Image (cartoon, rainbow, N blue to C red):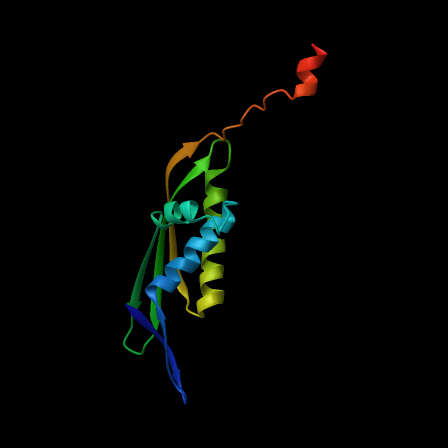
Length: 128
């Protein structure tokens, strides 16, 4: 579905729902320090974002975004959610020019960051 953004003397401007979702996904990935060019991570992130759009009587649009996410153990969940909401709202509004009415964040899990142990280098092995 395309959302009517506006109209001027040159014609109509419409922005696809897919574009709004892509901007929200990009904001989510940036916020979480993920490589936005990594297609596997992008595909995983797509499943975490839902965008609902409504066109009003006068072409006024409403955007509601739902984010399903996990939070790293030890991080303040309310603070993480507030900052994520702010990042997504600002990015979507700045890129599209359309007001975001709501960013609903649903925390479904917590995780512990996996720290991989490095194997000893050859120098360390020969010292023993």
